[in-house]
Length: 72
Image (cartoon, rainbow, N blue to C red; front, side):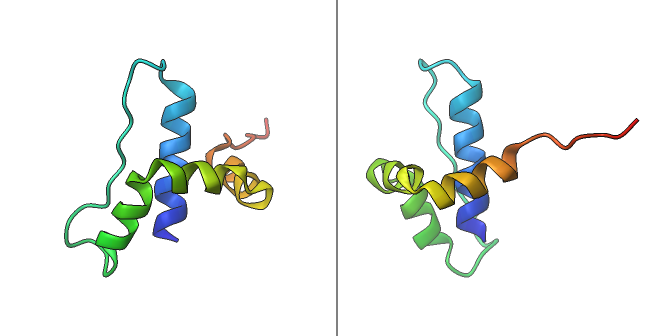
């Protein structure tokens, strides 16, 4: 779940910021039992690109970063 959250944050930042900005997303040290593996995945451009080519995963990410509809 932490990888999905990190990937969602990374995608949201990439979409929101101009291309001249470098985006780095990392798990805070000591906050997760597998922080090293997660940080390695989030830092690897090829792994991130492969994840974003997965239609199921990109659908989940889009749901994570979409804004909720507030009923009036």
